[in-house]
Image (cartoon, rainbow, N blue to C red; front, top):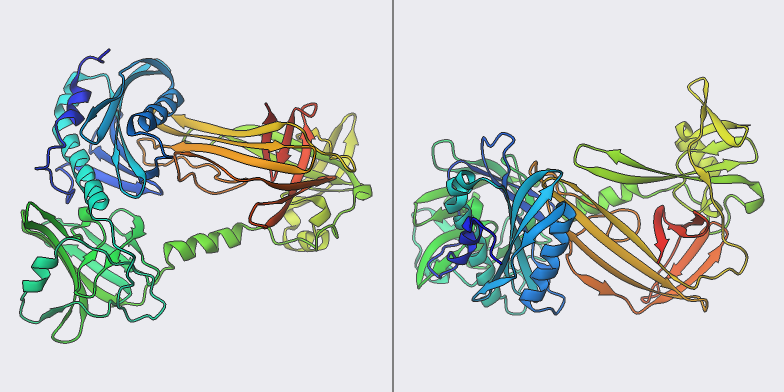
Length: 538
């Protein structure tokens, strides 16, 4: 079966001849936005029309063939949108695979094209086109979409064919530098480069650069380079990632910012290099030799923001619950009146998200509004001192609990749950699942824990993600609790050990690391909750 009209197929079936160039700048009238593991490309002034191209960062292929990998990814993503009307078999052209779907999303008919190709190091890159069933809309934007997909393909091919030899550390002004080398292109150009007053190469200056593309209305943005090999772009679209640097000055950051080295058919097409001028000032020079568009980045000094990795660690530390005791030295079982669980759907404007809350009701007349750790590890005194707004007096009203809040008594939502009995073990599999999205994107996540009565467990998971048209990438948990889905593949571990004790589960992973988390049964023991996430019995 071939989905008609065949315009979607035409987007991808002929663009991958080797006369394509790496993506250097977007077609006129297009915008891009990078959000976590996704880059979105969309024409401007679409209004409420649907035409969006989304590229995911390379994903592990899981040892699967290209066809099998795309079949699995496309089926999961398409069914997450809505009802599949029809779809093609996966087709191939060289090392590229593609398939087309027609989907009904709450009465709205959409085309979805999924294209995948190798991205080096056992990974695949998935590019998704989502469009209304409108022939004129497809005709209007298909050539631009071809150019973008072709550019992404060529960059992936370059990474696959020119993977860095064992990682080299760039010579920089930091002995702790983790910047990687391995840039294959641009060497012939830099060896013959001459420009009065500019000396390329040497120790790379880390910090902030002010960049300006030398065209009327050209991009202006801040580029931050860090000695851990990461970069951050802000000011004209935000993005971050890893860059490469060579002692001769060549630097690869992003082609769409004209900061990349690219050769084709023996000719240099794009250049980018770090330099110092005759006054010792540092900068980065980038040029697309085909269009003669130039980008100049001038060094401003030490970066004013933490690196992406440092910021992520700081955010995690800030979010980490701090008011705990030594294991088992917090609230004792005899001091607990009840533990209440409450689950509900919340709409944050980008699709529904299932939220879960736990509340602790103590026999001393106080209730805690946001339990995140086992009661046995909760430092009540520290919590009441540092988050007093979460503590309320309670009373019983029939079968319900009420708390005093803002001078009034309000029903405390939730159902009472059961703790584990002394010496209790489990003998079944439980799966945590999360999915969501809107017309234009969503996510799927499954994590299964298989418990045995001998106190051992194994873990297996699968996840995939894509985006919506407003650029808000959907996120969910990669483990239990928080984090972003970053892989569209399956995996499992070799198993670990667990121990139940009241409202606590202690899980020791295969690497020996141990974590204590909040645990309880609910819904007649059909569900368990670990760390605030529900796992349903299979």
